[in-house]
Image 1: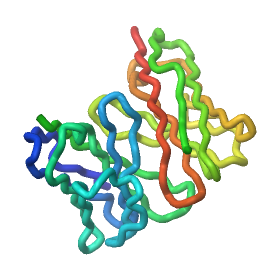
Image 2 (image 1 turned 90 degrees about the vertical axis):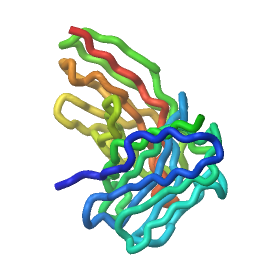
Image 3 (image 1 turned 90 degrees about the horizontal axis):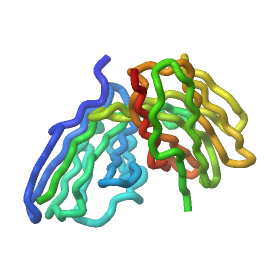
Length: 115
Length: 112
C-alpha cells in the first residue's frame, strides 16, 4: 500500500512568488491534514479536511494560505504571495476515520525556502 | 493553552544502552497521548497511542507510559540500536476536534 506522498520535496522561491504544494493521501482515507514546522519550532496544525470539506482551519496563519481538496482525493496548499516567515517543512497526513485514536500517517514533507 | 514540553532536547547514548525520554503536556480536554519517531528527511511515524485509561503500551523495544493525573508521559527504549537515531516527538490530542499538539521533540543519537 502506498503511503502519503507529497510534491515537491523541496521548493525554493523568492519573496512575493506563489508556490503550490500537493499531497496525495493514502487511498480511501477521508481525513487529510496539513501541518508545518518552521525553523526551531514544533510541528503545528494548519487544517483538516474530511473528504472535500474543511473540518477545521483554525491553524491557517493568514489569508495568504489557501488549501483545497476538490473531489476529496489529493489536496493542494497554495501560498500567495510567499513571505520569508513561510519557510519551513510542510507535512501532510491522512487517516481513515474520526476515531479519537485513529493513526495519522504522515508524508515526507515539502521543504519550502523563501528567499 | 495546549502545550507539550519534552526533555531532554537531545541525547547521545551508546548502542545497546537503554534510555528514557520525558514529556509533559497540558491539553484539555485530554483524549490521548502519542509518540512518533521521525527520521531525518522523513515524516513522523506513529509508535504508540495511549488513552487516559492506559498507563503503559509497548511496541517492540519501545515502551511508553502515561500518568494522566500528573500529565506526564515517557518513552523508554531498550537495547538501543543505531537505527534508533531519530527525533522522538510527543503529541497530545484533545477531545475537541482532531487537532494534535506537538512537542519540540528529543533528538536521539545512538553511537556504536
